[in-house]
Length: 319
Image 1 (cartoon, one colour):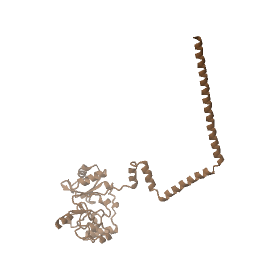
Image 2: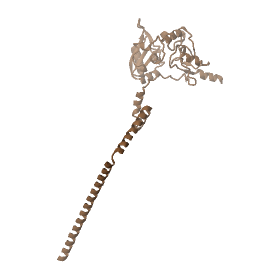
Image 3: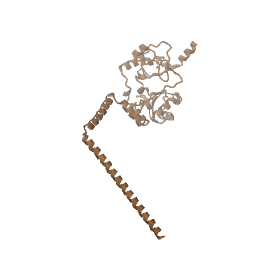
Image 4: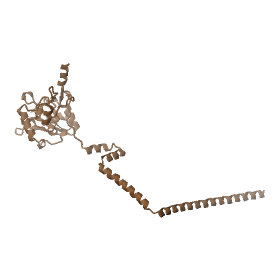
């Protein structure tokens, strides 16, 4: 039973969402002290703020649409790499990093796609694919999207080979292993190191998702505005108004109501009586008109009956 439980823990991993040199040098993400000179150098740069990812003038383009491609053959050209990466989407730009003096390839590149959807497709499908007989690795643009990032040339980075003796953990290629020892929560918090997600570990077969672009509140409101009815939008507007504004609106409405009541009371009784008299006069006039109309109808009916009677009497006298 205990062996099965240990196997379950060993197969569980987690990934770094922010970078800390001491944690990157730990296989389970729980170290609280640097264990090699590379980590010490990276920690010095980290604490002193010596590395600014935005200071790289060549790091142009949208970071959310850009992939890091590593372990590229030194013989692979830009054209070959572009052709291979175009299988996953339309490549907008590509930068194969070269040595500043010799111009030789450094074995890694940055590929920007037209859309974030295309980047994610390449992120999932291009990892461990072959280009010029070499198996490449693919990751998101941690240089610009991972807080606290320190590159490999300063002792940081992620991954690495065993023969180098400076492995870095927490990335896609080498995730943190679920800790088998007690986790020093207080020490990790003091150093500002991400705590292991106890009870929420991932399996080694799961693919960690790259960071998503944060949408602003106004953008979300505009996207949802058309889906709401006018009543819902009005209620939402009233809820978002500050209590002071709602209170001022209430008192303003009460004040207008009182003004109307006061104007009505001030109006003289004679004016109201005059309006009533005019109203009764119109009713009387309309009543007289109705009587005259009905009287004229009755008189016309009588004349018609009299003419009809005379006509019948005249016809009998001829017979």
